[in-house]
Structures are given as structure tokens and as C-alpha cells.
Length: 162
Ligand SMILES: [Zn+2]
Picture (cartoon, rainbow, N blue to C red):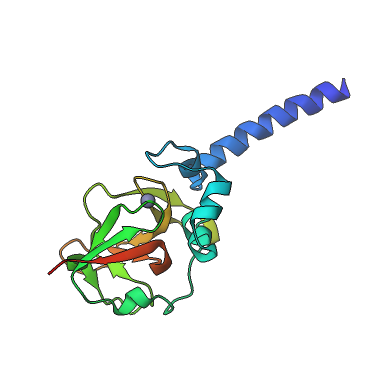
């Protein structure tokens, strides 16, 4: 009798847990992306810092990325799979300490609602490997009014061949 009731409570909790998983960004990890690796493979492929941001949605310390001062023409690609994510033509100086863009390359990123850290933010990840890149806010410059606040460690810059 008692154990049956526990079983019922347990089933109810797992429903709540899976529903919660859908809204806090964990669903991203469960989706199928064109490029996917096991957690162990990602750990091997990526540096510790890249893994922390791309796979665990960590955030790099502000003003630490060499890409902040990258002013050449070219594309910023996802460090997880190499897909071009942002063009230098949309990069701007936000003063936040993170590389910032007002638009991604079309189709390169997807977003989910992220309610961690006690606030609701829009999480940005690579559409090809699901790697977490940063967040997008609506206080950016024209023409989009958006600010894609990216972790430099999640991006690799490829200068345009002149
Ligand atoms: Zn990627």
C-alpha cells in the first residue's frame, strides 16, 4: 500500500521534471542536431573552456576574449562544429566585455528560453551541433535592435581571404 503510493508520487514527479526540462534549455541537449557527439567525445574534442561554454552553458569572464578586439573582415564560426555563425559586418562594440553582434548568419543559430540565474533570457545555440554560444537581448543597435552577446571562447574567427 505504502510503496504503491510512493510509486505514484514518483511517477508524478518525473512528469514535472520532464516538463521542466523543456523550458530550461535542457531540451536542447536532447534534440538531434546534424553534428552530435557523446559527452565523452565532446570532452575530447573541445578545450576545457570551450566544453564549459558550448556543452554546459557556461559563461566566460567578460573582457577575456581576444575576439573582442578582432576587427578584420571575416566570419566567426562555432568552435564546436565549424559552422559560420556571425559575420564581422554585424559585429559592434557593446561595452559589455563579450563579443557582440546585431544579427547571426541566416539559419546558423537557434534560440530557447533560459530561466536559469533567476531571470528569463533567450539562449542562443548553434543550429548544427547545438553548442551554447551565448544569449540575445533586445537592447542592440540598428537595424535589428538585437544584441547577440556571445562567448568568444565558443567562436573561432576565420579572416576573409583578401
Ligand atoms: Zn556548432
